[in-house]
Length: 498
Image 1 (cartoon, one colour):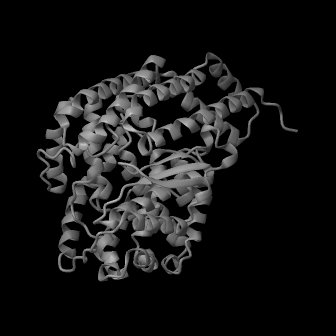
Image 2 (cartoon, rainbow, N blue to C red):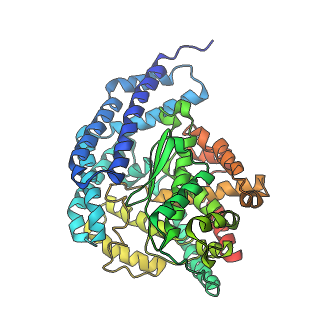
Image 3 (tube, rainbow, N blue to C red):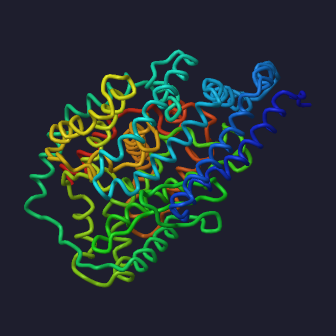
């Protein structure tokens, strides 16, 4: 007979309430990006701040500390102990911040992000700065409080919220290795591809046809439309909750390729959310393990599957069905198009090989910003310097497609950017293991048999939520902790040997 666990049961009830409130918090954020009229920003920000305070109040209730301590002494199983571990981690983060700071940060983020939507289009860095300075100030204050509470440096404290246990020194070591070989690999790939460039697709491609194509591919990728939807926003994202996932994209009438891959990327995020264990989703242990693991799912879909020749042969007829028949839509040309290495200004539209350079640049700038080594005013010059150094691109005076291009900094999401490349590394490692288990993987994909890939991800990643810490999750899935060598090998194979 199982011994009673009153403290753990009370914790479960508390976090079930938090989950319900966060459900509406996530939908409020989604609606603010998709449907809300411009005049709704201030009242929405006030409402979101109030909701954030309610959640913060629940999580900082002094009774929770004694409940967590009591639960740690109860006769729990392995899963329940992992659950208490994740509750304590979340409790530590919440209790590290004063309520007034949580409220001020919510309001500052909303104001900055809303203004950014128009300032970016106007290339208005000067207009962006006043709101952004306040976001930086409050982010530094948040980082200081969290760092003091957890014994971490300020930037590490912010990053820990996205990548538990990962430190900037770890990232610097990994990225330092990448910087040693990536520029030469980019140069060699560009030279290799120069003799056989892809044909450009001839538009325009009406938005309604692009949307229909995106929906068809989402269906092919197993998206559950009974528990999610596709919309339009200024910056593609995946939001909502597992039973109500919202993904967005943005369309360009003369370039269907951008939205096509963006939809696939966000579908990978959505499938992870939809695959999380529903019976424990109200608990921190039932949520996604980390931002990097989340990105590894979107990049498993976009980079590992969707950019493979097998998948592009599968979807070439679907693209022609929706957008018309033209030489650019042959499977062979689509492979060239989606493997083209061409340094570009925009991160979300960067090719797989150049993408890590965009992430490294942002990591280095935001770490210096949070650490007080630079100020907001210094970002453009540093951005220009690093874009030239890493990608050979001149961005002077171009704020729109330079340091204003991402929504992360206006929203104060400092510490998130490393997760993109850590996720790409995890995805490459998954597929080393998947191909070892399924040597005929490409033939299956080309035949439309994608379920074996989804089944592997569900069995090894999705259904575990946050039960295992990241290194343990990777070991169980692939036989070893994160090993960046798999990422380099994948890139060399795809861009220098294939």
